[in-house]
Image (cartoon, rainbow, N blue to C red; front, side, top):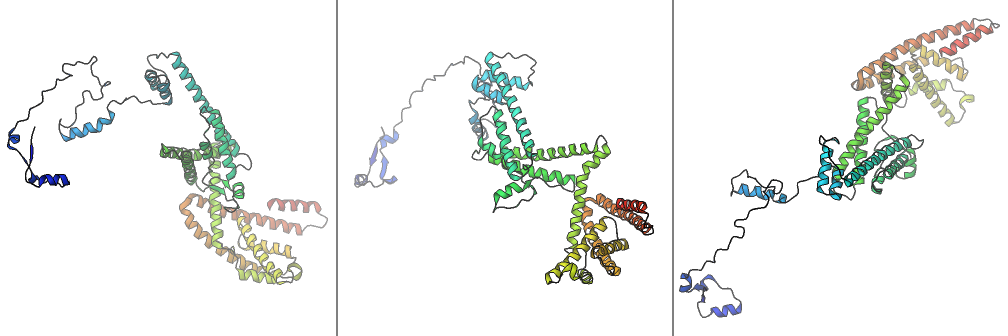
Length: 490
């Protein structure tokens, strides 16, 4: 044994006091430095001459025959081996379906491999697979449960669609009730136990309102029973599909998030899956319903069917254009307030309008509203210029029972209104040309044709009224016929 010699008189005291010793305080004795240590005898290799009963294969040893890309002994080879360490001894079999997973858990690995091969062949293997009674029972149970899942899904979908057609169920609250109820029906038929969280998540309504409700946050019950879900009609098919897809995708993602709340495993995958399915399903389903409605109106004619499919988009385009024109005209609707006030003063009478200040103010507002409605309806009917002026004068004479109405004042009002309406149409049509120039051109051409047609009708009515005045008082039959013709043309 080697000897350690402490040199100096104070070294023992240092050790007793717990003081550290330095390298200078410790030396080896001469014999100990020259002494050679004895090596222990070599141990016997207990694995010498061992031969395994079975040959080592890739199935029993995943690393059999493994040759690293880098030279043995290098750091690259060490790193490769370290990366493969977690897979040592791990079973490489992976179930690829619920049936295989159930077979693996209930019947064992060999049965699971049978079912894996059976499903990989699409249920028709080239070499017949013999199933034991237990395996056949499991297969029958699996098929029966799959059928229950399919029936449950179809029943839930049918219930949701059916409830959405019930009056009052188009509201936000109605859709929430329909979503939860249809999901509970699906779960009742399906073999899995009830999932209350999944059912509650289906109560999230569509993230789009076709009709705004009353109440808001201050009265949520009133909002739930008055606001209606859905995507409003758009002016083009592409905009309709995009808006419906976005609304469905956001709703599906929210439902997927709610159904996996508290379960972090697979949450992102479920959200993406439900969002994608809902984003695809909503525009597809809505488009199918619109197609069936168009087919029921058009019959077997393909030309009529194409027109019926396009009709709602055309109507919405024209509605948006008319709204934009009214917005451009402002509250006056193209009527000069000063000229309208002048007409109201001309037609004022205490018997018709009253004498109080508020009555007189209401009379002026009524005259302006009458002019706005007359010009709007007359323009929509294709009347303009003198024809529209004469119609307004005739109507004012009938309502006020006055014969001294100045046609020049009415003509000035009509001319000024037509000029303002023309300017507003020009601005709006310049903006709407980018949306659908073809449809805009058709609308403008239709307005021109309507004006020509209405002028012809107006001339016919005027001629009939002239004939009526020339009739004798006793010619009641002819007068009745002329009245009927005028009524038909109007």
